[in-house]
Amino acid sequence: KVALARKRLILDHSFFGAVAMSMELVEDEAIPTFATDGKTIRYNAGYVADLTVGEVITILAHECMHVVLGHQFRRGERDHAEFNIACDYAVNPHLKESGRFDWPEGGLYSPRFSGWSAEDIHDDLFGNKPEPESDRWKKIG
Image (cartoon, rainbow, N blue to C red; front, side, top):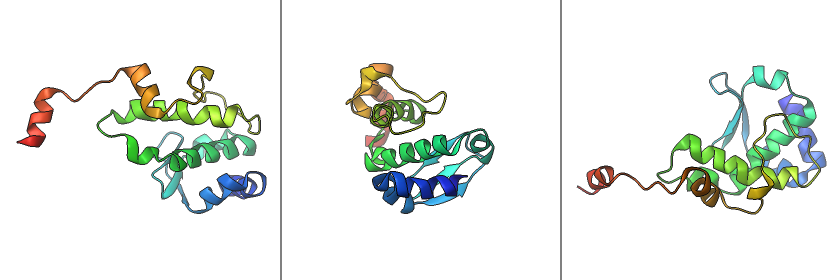
């Protein structure tokens, strides 16, 4: 289903298809849904089984947007899970508001964040939490 969705992505959404073709698809039961590191798109086959091909196309485009926006390089010292949520809120308006994708249930979306950067969304949702001073000194010393 994932390979078929990637083929359809190439035909129906060529920009995302080109990005998706640059990454290897890897089945990985250790992750709950989908993930990317910019080199691979990892997916849980059990999660995919309950999705339509259209929804998988949307999720592949979503993963491609993370790569295009360089999210894998921008987390800095932020909490990984928190930054991932912020990145999803930054990516999803591009896809949902286009009206060209089948939106899967549970996708993080708020029109309030349309046009916001992941960093600004993170600060809004979780606060701008600098490193604790004690950790900062450990790195310097």
